[in-house]
Image 1 (spheres, rainbow, N blue to C red):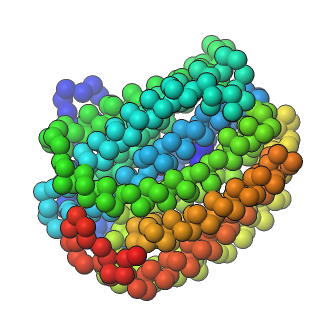
Image 2 (cartoon, rainbow, N blue to C red):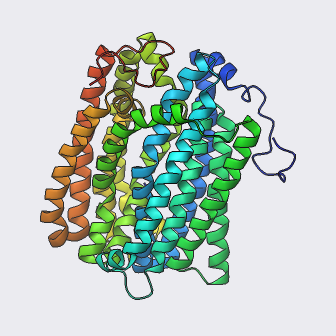
Length: 464
């Protein structure tokens, strides 16, 4: 739902010739012009567009074949994976996107050590999660209203978390070093593997929520291990401890991680709360609506794969305010048109893609899409900009939204179920959009980034 050539390896989508991208520093230097950026956007958009189509096909197949109740159990597991990855992994991926471009632009030989530092920290976090997960599994299963025999979903959920975290580190490295073809191929391989697995289970008549979670978790782990092994060998990364870089990454990450933890809780807790109060069937309808309503956000994230690493450079050049204005100016009209189209076409689209069983999903889809489309105005520039340059401001913003989420959840979810949850989530997305845009313009007008800043405790001017 709602971030990713060695002769000893068998022929795979990874075994390609990336002429012009294997030297990461050269790729950074050659991508300064807008034409080069356009080519990068094209590579990412086309490649991830194919992956998006495959992922949507997989999700729609799961929704149609499993039915609302069974799909609700699967959606709950996927939501837990997303929450764990958001809390334990995404901040470290942002750290790679922040540090690697500056290190490579300065021809520093330390860039690869940041990747190792991120993987080491993720390994420590994952070990702690596994220990806590197994100790608290029964209690968590009861709270989530998992029926007898369903608690094994939580074990496979941990497998999915480990694989996704590892794969995200590799994807972030390729993204930060502008090796965009490898970045796209890694994601495509993962998505294609999921589609093949789901299709095979459906053909054999053995597709259940438990089987789906187990298979998707194992696929994420296998693809993550293979991709990481290939990256380490092809990039010549020596496996060793990097205490200085680890400390530097952690110094930056701790605030971002706090912010992401709060943001993840308020943005992903809707499904666990809905499962606790109303059960798997309403979770199934609500999650089916999220699958479609998140389409615009996913599509816009394709461009973010190439744009996000540029933020530090644009800030250094003093061009960020202009890019923010253009993004907002050109985005408002398409956003309003898309919202109108959703409210007109939602019912036939749901009937075509899902089935009549999912009729309650129509109104949920309309509500959620409104908030998501407006949130897209803050992507892919405003939200990452605030995250990279004002992590403490983002923490305060997310604390505010978390408090509103907590109060709204108590009032709306027990009484109104999925519809109350949809109104709450959509309203908070609109509020977050307004705050993020305001903060982004404020940051762009005040922050200056010293070129090649690499100090372990270096801060941008005005950092607070």
